Length: 305
Image 1 (cartoon, rainbow, N blue to C red):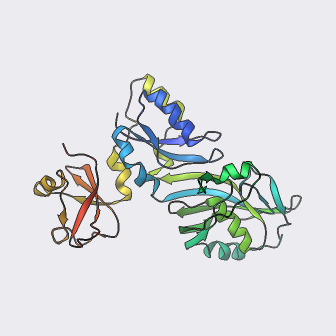
Image 2 (cartoon, rainbow, N blue to C red; image 1 turned 90 degrees about the vertical axis):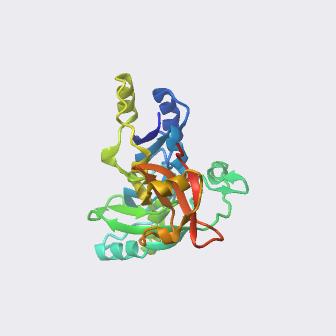
Image 3 (spheres, rainbow, N blue to C red; image 1 turned 135 degrees about the vertical axis):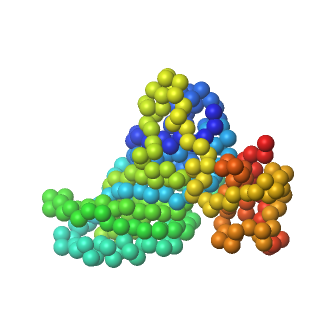
């Protein structure tokens, strides 16, 4: 069994929980996921099976799309709704959409984030959430994140009783982005403590919500011996630029050879990886040679039959 399963991860489960259950449902051990989702977050979780596990790293590194909600008025230990309140300040009831949109627009582009204490980033060989559970706070490394767009999608809702303001958003972002931290930092720009009060991932690895099945639906299909839910590896790699080989070029590629840039299409961007196909099958991932600028070299071989 080889391919990609676009899974709809339900809330209350870790990404590893999904992999563990799917190994039993699919009756195979070679299963991995293409990008962690927190237990409180639902959404698109690409699952790589068999030979599909060879491209896990590329799916994990791909851009993601989320919809969610920001609430101003208090911040939490986890930067989302599951944590304990650490700071509270009445949100301004006269906050305008123009002020919100301006603050969100300032977050677009390459930004610097400090990972939340409740995250899997390692510091001195130990994950931050382990320090947090011990009540310890350590210095965290800054990280770069790329925010392609960050848009408000609803009017703000003012809660006079709770003194909070909430609105929904959609964000397209690069690998390693903490949307929780993005929400908190938006609040800081508005001068009010904030947290991410809801989050759903609607796009990952080239898949969207409508492509996905739940664990229960996958189990039902397996009982019916219906495996049409498996997507080809090639579909997941639409996130990468594509090169289609001639027969002569494939004879070079299947033996791990270099390709001369002068023989390749002008539109290729050699600063990014290239998904190399032959007869519509993904056969290899190519990238720039570190020393020989006139060629590209194999980074990972997937098929050489």
